[in-house]
Length: 630
Ligand code: F6R
Image (cartoon, rainbow, N blue to C red; front, top):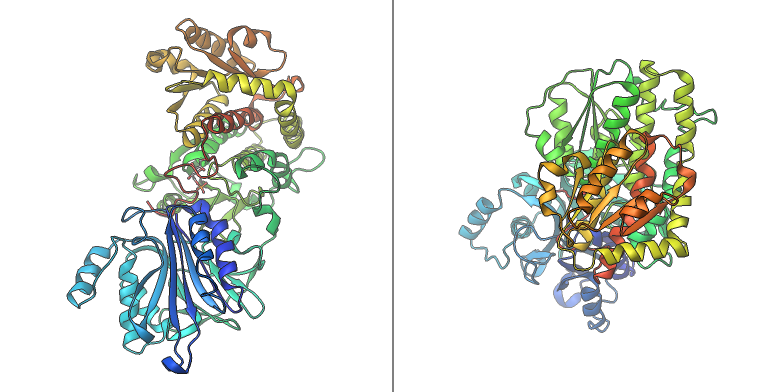
């Protein structure tokens, strides 16, 4: 939620900041803005000046405003930028960051991601000392506190250290001031912040994605530290001013990974990257004989008596799929809890409880707080995340990294499939450790898991074929005029139904709910009529016949059904108004692995329904990709 970026060094400043914001826009798009330092001259005693450009709405509005500055900003060598997801104060130019305070040499500007919980109290104190507030934001207090320090003659570093000492809540901030036009100071508490290292130029940003076109070398900034950047140096220190030494880390993602690469949206691109995401995530963790190599986390798995998955949204659905896999294969009880509930639940556990926070971003504040809650009872923490160096990787005892590459589309797609892959590996690893299944059975499942990239590829090709396109078009037609929809599945297809419903509601704004098919008669069936399409995951084996009966009951009440079933499934075709086909070659695929494949048609269904409604699938309203506030 909100993205911040800073640059200091050469004359590429505005370009680097805008490029950074473009890659951070998934974090919020209510407004965007830049604060730039202009070098001083003899006339003003050689201190710099600050200039600002801000616009409400998407980044393109800010880009348009920059074009009208007619070269006023050329020669700028340092600045900070922000893209906003509004928390305090509606989206407006006044509430847009950067926020500023002070005059002349003491002028400061700040960008902020997070929430300052004690802002009202700080604001009252500042107003009493004569500061006039112009915005409704919590952030503005930071600007005024900073300006007070700089006005007293403190350096930007000193003023920021002192300011940070007054703040309660979560924040990543980056600041510039007129007195030191070639410097950026940044700090964080709970919200993410990285420093990017360059040659004669340095960067700061909410995440590495913002900077991949410029550098692959990064430094983490920890809670309670200040980073001071100039073109030629980066200094980390504690708030008290003690220098901190830290090794940089290298990020493997390449810059193209954050570009559209010819696709009309990131979501569509990311759906098609799923075979590669699965391949990279499984690679090195499954031997050719089908055995699992989880040496990276082995130690943590021995003696585990209970597993708790904590996560939000799509990642929570991955946890539900994992519950089914771990319980059926490893016979360990698994609880899956929404992280925002777990954190306040005073959870029960002990040292043999394996707590698995699942988070694509590794930044979700509720998931991080859930980890803290698990620490309270001494749980072992194994994080599943897609983001190297993210906050969660530093809070966990061990990490299973999904290797899906950066995900920009707000709706999670490829990272969900990569989470499923890693969690299926975990289920197999636990089953091996506990000897809960015969070796050949485990090796057989390992072989099947190795085939998943290929199976997802086949599924995408089928759905992208002429027949697949016609099937999707027919399914989209079923949704024309719909006022709600239901997604049904049993067993491992139940979380897939939940995920399908979430994808559809978040990008098409159509109320959609997922249910275990057997629950229909206990309430939801009252919704069913011709304007409430039912999406049915028929499943195989024990689940199939029961699901079909439940779906028939909805058809009898006028529902129009979209079935997800194998191409040659005549029973599905008979019942359904449209069938999203899965390859016939999936016959015999173990049901426990099926969510990896069955999710794919639902992602495409959501995508095409939203496009049919003319909506921006990459930037759905009211959402931000990283939820770094409670
Ligand atoms: C839905 C979606 C969200 C996230 C959730 C958790 O498409 O993306 O529901 O899954 O906000 O985010 P992470 O995984 O970053 O913790």
